[in-house]
Length: 383
Image (cartoon, rainbow, N blue to C red; front, top):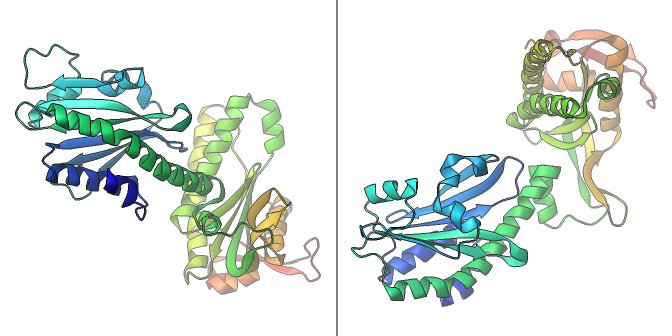
């Protein structure tokens, strides 16, 4: 108890704390052979996570569960479901034929592992948030009464320790979800003052979906949401896979940067566009099979210095990039409508990337708000 309350302050991750706690229990002759923590988490992809420790493991095994798992037969036929539906305790003596408790599928697997006793409790966090903890023993006869009392004494302290770590992870996850991994690191490191930021060199990509207003007027709401999600998946996954950072979604558009601190930033951006175009072609094939129109899009690309930081009102900030280079990328994206070419790049980017031979020079164009014309190139997707 003293270790759990006072000696874990320097540990960021609950799985490391949980493994060390189980090790200390085992050293104290508590016959723990297996233990789990089950958390409900707020994440765009997963509904929950399980931290699993077994005797002899120096690190926990972590499993993530998709939305819909709560409706699966595996979950519905489990002690976890029983606890989440109000049971204050679930226990089964697995080596005692006279124990006539519920026979869940899990118990057969545990017997195969040599487990003799299994017990689980709700782990109560603040404001009614409930998770689950379980312990299992391979000792003949299972846990002793003193072992059970020790577990119960530890639960309130473990609930506090785990809630702090879970909230920290939640804050990080939410920031990564809504502002991206790099911006989230900056914010968590203290970049929360309006006007705070740095100047960085970056390759800039701005993408916009064509005729979205008309499509959203014609299609049912759920179809429009499915369309947007498919479009953003097709664009976003290649960008992130190639090291780009999506700073924001703007209605039916997005803004991403590839920092020039990576010497391959421009090449990575071109690779991301080529993959995104292939993914969008597949998406359009699927839309046609459903009787929908294919999606059009425009992408503008430029390179230059941008101010990267907090901008907004006193109480509402946006962590983004601004500067003339962003404006050029935006104007190039708008020019795709006029030139009927889906991807346009500036000469500055093409020269930086060293890819002029693979691009088509379309000549110089006066862009709104800029004093000098910009040499514009078209991207064919071939590199």
